[in-house]
Length: 217
Length: 217
Image (cartoon, rainbow over all chains, first blue to last red; front, side, top):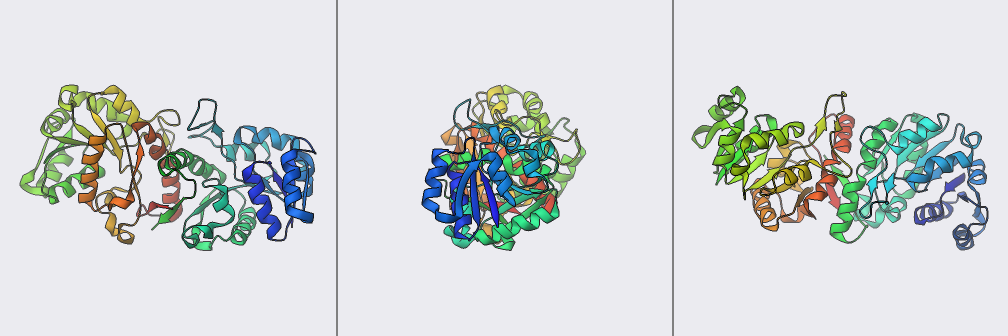
């Protein structure tokens, strides 16, 4: 499949490389078509990897990943262009982190709203699925590196068909079906985004990001 | 030990009964000394159980549990009287839930503040330990009812000695030391209180509150 990855940070690079390894064609999008980090990523990942503007990556992808900083996500998607988003599935792994007051960051939006909902509202023809935003990116694409993958990934979204597609990607990453918890509509992203504060403090207590939460029932 | 339990709801009754079963003397506090729910609880729990006002329960307890609704907690502790709180450990299991906008509730305070911090600020001579607030009360006092107790309880507090005492209570409830995660100071209660939104939505998705999260590392 042709996939557009928006964002050139560690999360975008990690997800992009994993998608390439799984046989997909991936275009990494950034503000400029000649972004250095994207160029490095393309050089490392061979012929199925390419780079371009946010607009080019969104036009290229049949499915999109939002791997940008949460505070920039809406603007990035506007740069990508609503016409390039129409009808597509966006797997939104971003979090609305606010680093302006120091560490650990707080959230720019929470409680009675979420970034997932904001994106869905701003781009009603996009099919937003919030997923994977509750863990370190290495685990997102390779859950089996920890306890044989026996921990939980959450999913929120209004479109059932989009969640089926997101689930297929999660399976390909190594997530077992019993460890994927569909919480319901996109407003449930409030729950997963608000998990970030305890994630950040657990990271502080453990001194590593290589952990996840497992639903025990 | 003499323990004061503030609050007559299911959480207070469950914790109070468990403390009685462990051999403690427990006074359940409420707004009035003749509260009916407290009287029922006393009748069920025998000679080591008693009831009284918040003030009487706080004066009685060498250690206190805050099992009141989060929105009422500060007022309840004012009724209990700062002199009766001085130097004591308060295990705060409450959450700042706001039911005024319907279900699921949002939080009255979060992100850059928490109820745990508000209580600690309002009563600086009280030693607040936030714990157990991230799960259904049946599991708080009997973690072994689920997967042999192999799931996580978080703890936040500024006073190390108070956390030692809280840990002893958790051990008595059945929590194994490796499943107790001390996140740090009381400001880390932001993390555990903000776990409520995902708890509530997981409850919605599963249709039961008999679950918990386990830190997998």
